[in-house]
Amino acid sequence: MFHVELYSTANPSSSYSLKEAVLTGLAPDGGLFMPHHIIPLPNSFWSDFYQKSFNQICIEVAQHLLHPAVPNQDIPTLIHRAFNFEAPLVQLDDQISVLELFHGPSLAFKDFGAQFMAQLMAYFHPKSEKPLVILVATSGDTGGAVAAGFHNVPGIQVVILFPKGKVSPLQQKQLTTFDNNVTAVEIDGSFDDCQTMVKKAFLDKDLKKSVNLSSANSINIARLIPQSFYFFSAVQQLNTQNDIVVSVPSGNFGNLTAGLLAQSLGLPIKHFVASTNINDVIPIYLRTGRFTARPSIQTLSNAMDVGNPSNFDRMQALYGSTWNHMKSDISGYSFTDKQTLSSIKYIHDQYEYIADPHAAVGFLGLQSYLRENPKARGIFLATAHHSKFKQTIDQALNFDTPVHPVLNRLKNLSESYISLPNSNTTLKHLLLDKFT
Image 1 (cartoon, helix red, strand yellow):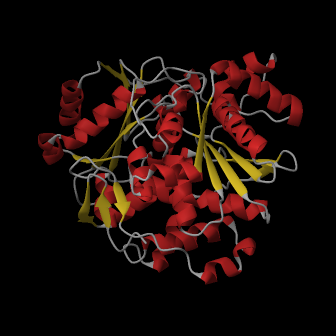
Image 2 (cartoon, one colour; image 1 turned 90 degrees about the vertical axis):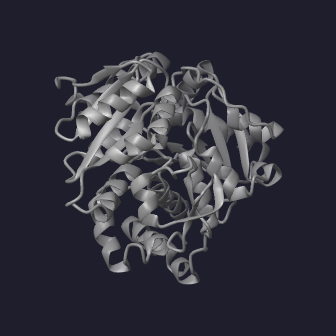
Image 3 (spheres, helix red, strand yellow; image 1 turned 60 degrees about the horizontal axis):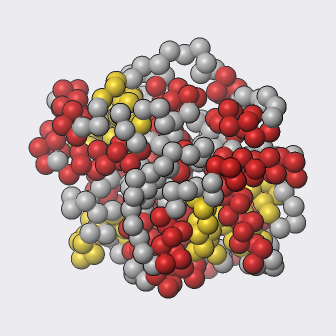
């Protein structure tokens, strides 16, 4: 349970409250926050598990994790404000289902984390204090979800760093067309550069003294809590006695870590598949036991273009850095852009279902695992709506696919963003000028 205390992955003997962890995002020593103890959900939760609504699952899991830092009676309000959308499971055949995580305002799975985090941060942050500045890096979907989740939330300002030329045009519009408390910043570099700039800003003592910084990336523990909810929903909707395997298209590995958290709480998921594009440092680690960060390579599944996944530290913390245990629970597979395009076409031809490039990679990973484990039931995650990647989808399917109405509305909106070099000093000056 999180309310006991949390520690920094850089110092397992440290201790922090949930409020400190949520509002600061990154520990002062640069580590990520993790709970000292994860207590499984009680038997009473499971007795009527298959009858619960999505919101009831969210409320009960949140109460288990957050009380007494957030009293039980306050949690239903947070949940109802955060979620007016769910995560439906669509069965493709007798063995494979897809969990759709794109029914929130920005059409991406990160809406679950961003909407919940906005409510939790607003709950913890006194309105009388100086603004809380959310500094976040995005490789695609995070920015739009954070912008939508935090837009016009009182007492909170948002600064979103995105890599120049490395997010799709519609993804860029989703984070550059907000006003008021949302500032988009184009960085002349990669997502890894953006993420490094965010981390260095958090470790800059002078900056932290002057600006009240926090993060909405998956380095923030408040992102993992709500992302665990839909793993419960997936298992509930599948409702099978077979072994369940979940394939997670992975970049920064927050989503897979949230699945491991749900499993630690007692959710009966037998195995996870870490499905990546050619940025495959985790699949290589799972095969060899060696982790070597490297510069990311741009691909069609751009939200997964991460060469040094932050949440690997959390994965190691969950397993006590024991490679043998981790590789027994998680299989890793990586795929090229050519395979991704072929997967999009195969899924459409076989199931009349349109998958975005990230879901297509998740499908390939699940398919690879099921070949060796044919008795399992598989779920892969659809992390974004396909029309966010219309150019790629049209190329794969060779026809003009429809655009989601939410995205259609963006076409005529003008963009507003600041362009900066890949420079920690320049970002520091921007934050100081804007928020002091």
